[in-house]
Length: 366
Ligand code: UD1
Ligand code: UDP
Image (tube, rainbow, N blue to C red; front, side):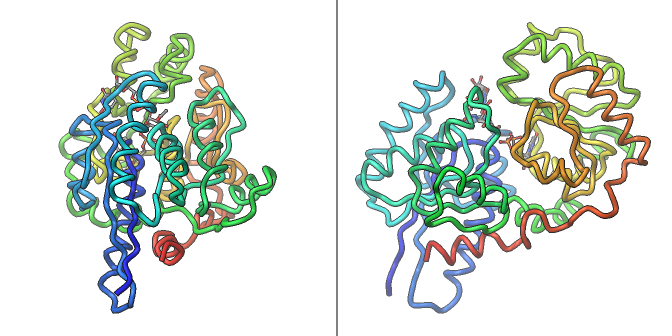
C-alpha cells in the first residue's frame, strides 16, 4: 500500500481550528478502502501554549495529539521564527515527509514554509492568497512568503485566487473554500448541545455584543486601544470580551479604565465561542476568523481594523471596517441596530465554499 506522509505544522489558536477539519478529513479518507494511506504527523510549534489557547482546542475538536511539540513559546518575531526554524529542521530532516502542510499567516506558518523548502519538501498552504495590502502587518509578510514558496496554494475564495494571479502565481492554485466553514458546520450543533457558557455567564440570547481584540496594530498602540475602549463605553449594551493574552498584557497599562458595560472574560474554548457568536446581537472584532464566523451565524460584524482580507463580507453588506475610530465604531453599531441587526436579505450565502473544503484539500494532497 502506498503511503503519503504529511507533516502538519500548527502553533496558534486559529490554526488548531483549521487543522481540525483537515485532520478529520484525513481520518475519513483512511477509513475508505483506497490503495493510498495518508500518514499525518502533527507538529505543534508551541507558539500558543496556555491551556485555553491550545490544549482545549485539541480536546474539544478531537485533533490527534501532536507527535512533536517544539515548545518555542513567545518572543519577538525573529527569535520566535528562528527558534521554530532551527527545531523544525531536525524534525523534517528525520521524518522526510512528502508534504508539509501549513495554515494561515502566523510566524509558525512562515517558519514552516522556510524550513521545508530549504529541505526541498513541497509545501501546501491552506488559506493561500489572502492580502490586506498592509505590509506593516506581520501576517501580510508571512503570507506573501508562504504563497511565493508553496507548491499547492489552497485558496478560500475567488478573491484569493485573483490576488495570487495579480502576483503572477497561477500554478498549483485551487479555490477549495474555507476550512473554518467546515469546522463551524461540524461544531455548531455540538456547541448547542454541549456548551453551557450562556448559563455560566447568565446571558440571554440577543442581549449583548461580543468583541475580540488581539491584533498588534491595536494592542501595541495605546491610542487605538483607548479609542476602541471609548467607543465600547458609548455603546448602550453589555459587551462580552474574551481577552487574548496579548491584550490582557497591554490593557493593564494602556487602557486601565474599562467601561462598566464591558465584561472581560478569559479566552473561551471553541464550542463556547461558537455559542457566544450564535447568540450575540453584533460582533466587534479585529480577528480574521471571527469576521467569517459572524457571517456564518448571520451576525453583523464591525471590524476594528483599517482593512480586511475578507473583502467579500464588506461588499455583501455584512461587515463594516471602521478601524479604531470611536465615532465610526459607534456609528456602525447604530446602523446595524437600525437594520434590526439583520444581514442584507440579498447577501450571497456561499462566499466561502460548500463546507467540504477539507475533503478537497485531502484529495489534492493524495
Ligand atoms: C498570533 C499570530 C496572529 C494570529 C493570532 C491568533 C503571528 C505574527 N501572529 O498572534 O496572526 O491572529 O496568533 O490568536 O504569528 N501569549 C500568552 N500565552 C499564549 C500565547 C501568547 O500569554 O499561549 C502572549 C505572550 O505574551 C505573547 C503574546 O501573547 O508574547 C503574543 O503571542 P504571539 O503568538 O506572539 O502572537 P499573537 O498576538 O497571539
Ligand atoms: N476563538 C475561541 N475562543 C476565543 C477567541 C477566539 O475559540 O476566546 C476562536 C474563534 O472562534 C476562531 C478562532 O479562535 O475560530 C480565531 O482565532 P483568533 O481570533 O485568535 O485569530 P485570527 O483568526 O485573527 O488569526
